[in-house]
Image (tube, rainbow, N blue to C red; front, side):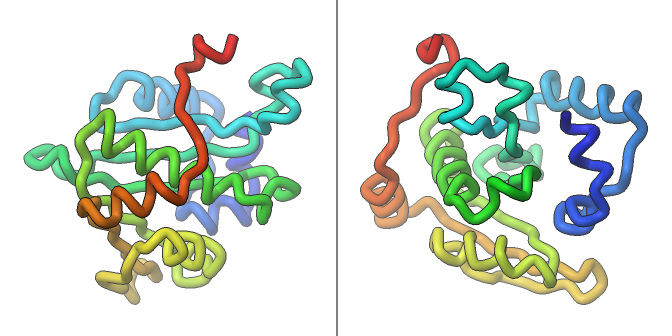
Length: 174
């Protein structure tokens, strides 16, 4: 499914990705499972999943964290992709980023998050601005803006108070 998504020129542009062969994609996904500096969650449509749809058929995107500085595990880059166009604009991206921020803070000890977004991807810029990310730099060479969110006590409380959700493990959903 992921390989099919990434054939889309639109998604390649939005995610600053290059097309990969299926073999390269499998290798990449294996590295996501094994590398300690990467964290990814697949986003499923809960309604379809609750109705008995398989995980693969319910996939709509992913949300990722990269620990970009090995010397400082408190800093991570965050990414979101809602790959299925019919699921964009429904709040899944915001909900997924909120969950990943909470997970990163509470489970991984991350205190600063960065999002690097292409200049033309205004939907993502607005999403991260809504979540209190602030612009810290822009790169004309890479055609992207870097936004940052510091997990201060005030910001953590805001995030928790405005995120009406709870986290459960995958096993708990079965």
